[in-house]
Length: 327
Image (cartoon, rainbow, N blue to C red; front, side):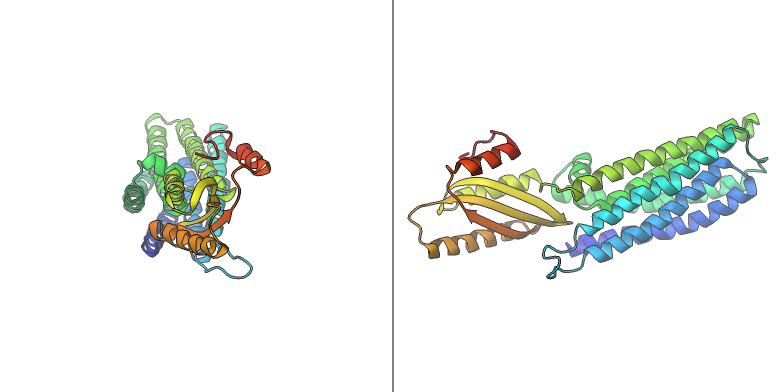
């Protein structure tokens, strides 16, 4: 888990350095050329640079150990900061790109100067963004292989949104650079600033889509996300195979941070067990679950009767009548 944290920090730091340099270059190019697409891209890079700072803060604060006020740790705080990244992408990047684009399309724009500087900046920016993008993709692909999931399935299920945020940001940046290049090129070729405005609007649309995807990922994690279904199935199988357990009545898992899962299970234990037997069995089963899955952070096991009607009602209300309680 520490390796994953370090890799995430490296990915974010590399993206921060690349975006800061690119943002400065784009601002200069936007002032010189007067291009709306270049101005939109400058706002995009400023937003990305600010976002890397937010991601670094999230990494640092979410890694604090549990304490009395936060007994399950601070892992969920990472998702708050990554959600702020989605808001910043839209508020700082997309809205400015829309504004620049509509200003140009409605004729409220200055004359565009020689775009040569803009082309040079876009080319250099593309190379730098590609380096950052390659690191982010490499990390996300590595994490997906480690989890044994296809890339898209990993993105939907992950509890580590930091590297995915950088990957999506950099992917949007590369596409945005191509849009800006096309907008400037078509403006130069046709003499019509409409193309430059269209490029800026398309960059705004692109950033809005990225912001929505990131917001969706982090919203699911913040409102309570079940652990990987494969982990849940394995936990059920291991508990069901314990000699003291008659039936696994209910299992609830909750992601409480990157690589941290809270596991709660209600078990119908054999009636002949003594209180001491139950205590020792619960301690042993919890240790076995943590040994089998490093992401399981806390385990709570509750002995219950399987035929309690109120318990059945609550479980059925949560999951439906499939699978049945005695499965």
